[in-house]
Structures are given as C-alpha cells and as structure tokens.
Length: 304
Image (cartoon, rainbow, N blue to C red; front, top):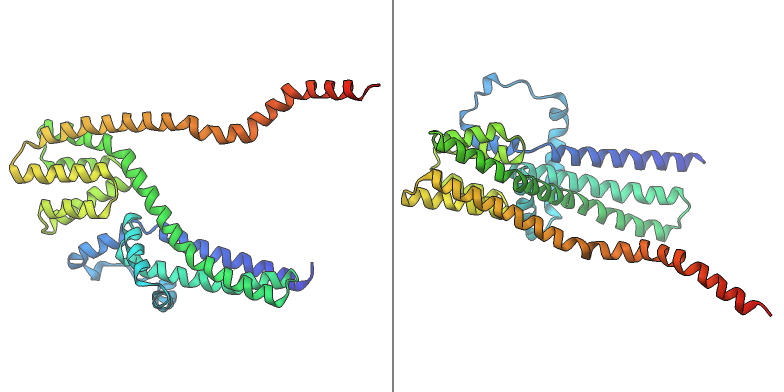
C-alpha cells in the first residue's frame, strides 16, 4: 500500500467519523430546542453555566454552514425537513444543525470519495463522476437520518400509549385532576411520550389553554391513536364530559386497536415469509429430495 492510498483511507475514515458525529448530535437533540423556546422568557441567564469551548469555537461555523445548506435546499424540502425534525423531537431550533450537517456531508462526499477513488487508480473522468455522486449522497443522508429518527420516535410513542392512558385513567378515577394525572404519566413513562406529555404540561403552565396545548400536541406527532385521544380530550373539555369516562373508553379502545394490529401483523407474516422460503428453503429441499433421484436417472441413462 503506497502513501497516497494510506492518506486516502485516513481521509475517508475521518470524514465518516465527522458525519457520524453530526448525525449522533442530531439524534441526541431530543426536546432541548422546543423546551428552550417555550421557557425562554423565564430562564435566569445569570445562573446559566458558561458556554463550552467547542460551542464557542464551532458555533459560528455551524451557523455559516447552516446558511450554506439553506441556500441549496429547495423550499419544499425545507418544509418537509421541518416536519421530520418536529416528529424526531429536534424542533425548529435543530434545523440549522441539520442544514449544517447536510453541508458538511456534501463537502465530505465531494472531496473524500474522489480522493479515495484516485488513490485506487480510477481515471479522472471516473473521479469527477464519483465526486458528484458523493456530494449527492452526502446531501441526502442527513435528511434520511432525521426521517428515520422521526419514524422510530413515533413508533415508540405508539408502543407506550396504551399503558400511559391506562395509568392516566386509573389516576383520574382515584381522584387526581387531569394535569396531575398527565404529570404522573410523564414521570412514570420515560421516552418520547413522556417528553411530549411534559411539554404539554409546560405549555399549560406558561399560559396556553388546555385546548391549545392539545392541538399543538397533535401537530407535533404523527400517531393516529394519540391524535384521536387528544381530540377526545378537547371535545370532553368543550362539552363538559367526565374526564374519567373519556380516559376509560379511550383505554379500552387502545387495547382493542393493539389486538387488531397484532392480528394484522400475524396475517401478513405468511406473505412475508414466502419470498425467503422460495429463495433459500425450497431450493435446498429440491436438492435434498430430487437430487438423489436425478443422479440415479442420469446414471441409468448414461449406462450402456
């Protein structure tokens, strides 16, 4: 291995580590941005710790890279990115970090991929083609990553929702108010659903009505069951229905939906197993069953 190939491999590894670190930072953002926006008016900045050295050094660079990524991102993709960031729990404050990651990944793909190809002996035309392909892949990967984070987060919310509504129904039936039951559920259910319930309480405490906070909860999530549950609470609050009955009926409905989803997945399982069976299991069975008979037939036909 000559020096050029070694330097190319090191450069590619460094670029991959840089992009991976940026994507991991996006996945750890969670609700810090949205909660900071909500509580911005009541934060005591004198009691805040000093800004870390890394943020002071690379913060302006991230802002410039974010503006660069915004210039090359179409407006339709910006709206889609905002939606995916909201579903992933990153919030509008994380858009700049996503755009900066897209810009970094694009530059890494445009520089390191052709450098690696040149180290492997690819001709100049192929190097230019790989540069364009690397830039395109680097530009698209952060968006796909944020979309995947959003889908994973919504699945976790859907998974924890039935038990959370059961806990809230039991708490209200025991004499607690709705806000107290939501607070208990947010503390007892760690994860995205607990974070969303905590943010719901934060919005109510900061002056939003229960109706507005529930509407914003529906806008921040893409879970059909949670949306219908929030709508049921809005209607119960508007017409004065007992909250305990609403929670109990929604709890029973959530359990029914979970059983129906399990039955649907079980019904789809044979169809999903058909392709691997045809590709891997059936050929082996044919070899084991028909193979000896085929060898015997060949021997019989080949004998004088």
